[in-house]
Image (cartoon, rainbow, N blue to C red):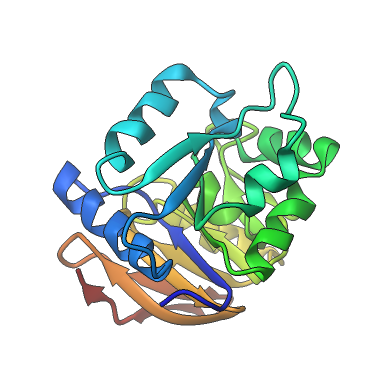
Length: 227
């Protein structure tokens, strides 16, 4: 597909490796490249070596993978490192800590520049909600809280793991009834594909899994295309 602005937010991974690979292939095809350059940003897990190894294992057969580390400091060529990509993957973990580090180093602004220049942005969990104005997060504890200072590339709020974690659905509904911005929820294994700021397709690698529009009146189940 190439050209244009693309974001794919994932509610979580599939039940199996093969399911997750189908999601990744869908995203890589959006780059229009046979073997895309993919930059992994694992800030949300404090750049854990095991997380980085997992992404290399998942992506290396189909993409040229590199990693952006911010410790002990970001690389001198930070801007070119980020813009010289076909896709950027944001890993899951602590969203609030991740955003704080990004903003200190200007990574948030560079992500917007990359997006506007045609780099495909994607990720699961923290890598889903970070693109929105607001999101449901466990950054502050397992009780789940509403966070309102996302990057704001996409309007409204988002909730991942909608069918994967028992507290997600009731907590999101509770927050919205309390005045939290309405938005989109995604089950594990579900991808929300945005072109610009418009949701153009919901895809799933898990049978029966999908996404929902959620507001104070309830939730609307959205059709999802099986991958």
